[in-house]
Image (cartoon, rainbow, N blue to C red):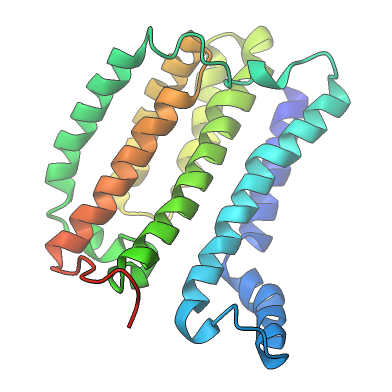
Length: 242
């Protein structure tokens, strides 16, 4: 647990200072500008600057939530298997019905939350999603990638690392930082993260698999983006941006 929590603290701190928009503007964007000045067709900052920012955000999550903990853990505990960090399919179908039930409960809550003004203006994160379906789908691919990384980090790696020492208490230890990464999002969503952390953590502890939780997460995220755009009458009408 000590090694797990120290790695968690480092990863979340690095994300806060280097995995967001401010770091992108100061360190990544100048490189993209230089590429354009040399005559490269991409990155087309005039059209896709915001999307490039989210590409860095998503890549930073995959790096911090998957690659860093796996490498660090294998160096510290070489006998532990990466597949045992929630990546085995065994147990997925046996407990799938529970996740389907959770999904329907969340969808009911979404119907209530969707009426709130902060929800309608907050989603999707990528505001140019309404410009074209290609914009929307590129954003969703990045969004889904970071959700997989998120599930692996909190429900896969953290629970696997602490299960033997803390037992079921590992679920509640994991829920604290999981809730805190939702700060800045709508108030009710931040509170819902506490419930989601405990429920999804309990199911992942039982099934030893993150896949069902990942599918629930991306289904809810996708529907939230679609619902927010639809409520603003802003769904894309063309495949490519004009």
